[in-house]
Amino acid sequence: MTDARERLAAAQAELLRALLADGPIPAGFDESRFVVERRALLSKRRGVAAMLGPEVANELGERFRPLFDAYATAHPRTAGSRAREDAANFADWARERGELPPVETPRKRWWRRSS
Amino acid sequence: MSELPRLGVGIGWRSEIDITVERLPGVDFVEVVAENIHIGHIPESVVLLRERGVPVLPHGVSLSLGGADEVDAQRVKHLAEVAEALDAPLVSDHVCFVRAGGLDSGHLMPVPRTRDALDVLVANVKAAQQDLPVPLALENVAALLEWPDGELSEGQFLAELVERTDCYLLVDVANLYANARNLGTDPERFLDEIPLERLAYVHVAGGVEHGEVYHDTHAHAVLPEVLGLLDELCSRVAPPGVLLERDDNYPSDTEIATELAAIREVVEKHR
Image 1 (tube, each protein chain N blue to C red):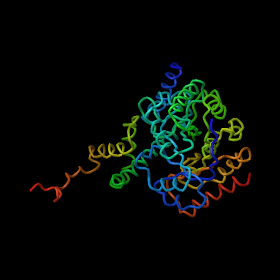
Image 2: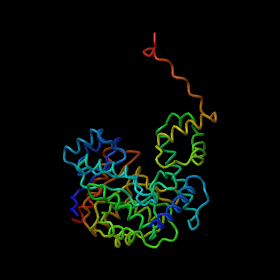
Image 3: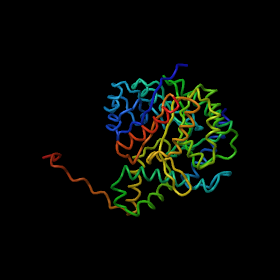
Image 4: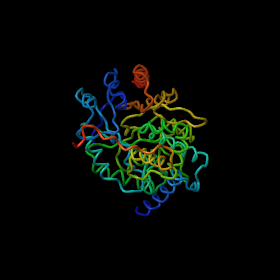
């Protein structure tokens, strides 16, 4: 059983690395179907990020898609990570690259004034 | 093993269509995505449906039972707690994996149909069943790619899973259609091979074709071909329940009601 788990673990990890992080296509998979699956996973992840961070997607406009795809392939989602973190990490990543304006320091609200 | 209830025709409850689901005629049961339910903060609309006596079935999407990792006890515990909070007669998840090698695919990935993968799946399902207060049903997924070196057909794989774990099956006819279209699997052979007496209920959903590929989006209308597969299934067995899944791009209440009525028509044709 442990052997079965280990063999399966290696095969599944290789597949996900290939699909999510542009690793080499594992032996035996149909290449065209593999590419369709890779695109479908990327498109689903991009759609979720756009839904959770519409202001970022709107601000980037046509740049959103290529930028998100570059970010996603360089940063495959790790097990246990959350979709909101993914959307927020992408915004930070785009900001660091100067694709989004820097975050403005929140204005001090009048009700928070100390004196 | 307890008998499963007759469920009727239902729809996946989603927060975006909560009021729609409440007021649609002919909703005999609903399903909620278990991961979206927080114990202690059950949505008012779900509570209302429970008060009306509508069964609410928790549907998991993250157990990754087909994954090589040991089952995540916290995720099973959450599913169990949701089942208890909703007094659900059964829970479900998928024959798939979503995590491997520290990565999360963000989608339900098919497992290799090998003896190795089946042994691991069986062990994981048994581990999950130990911590669940109600029966577990497992669903066939839509796959865009196929693992090499499969040793069993999908139907044989599921039949053996049921035999070894006593789980129930949740048959998604839209996924069956997707696999037939995209991978060339034979849906009739699938229905011949699975133990239909272990069918808990059926999923129906819409999708769309992009190029040569059919995408199981749950965001488009249900295709007549998918209802055709439901018809084929109903000619073999009266399913305890049939549920429409719609997850995005929500149409008007009237359109949803029309889809539910079309499903009911197919089911009742065979009564």
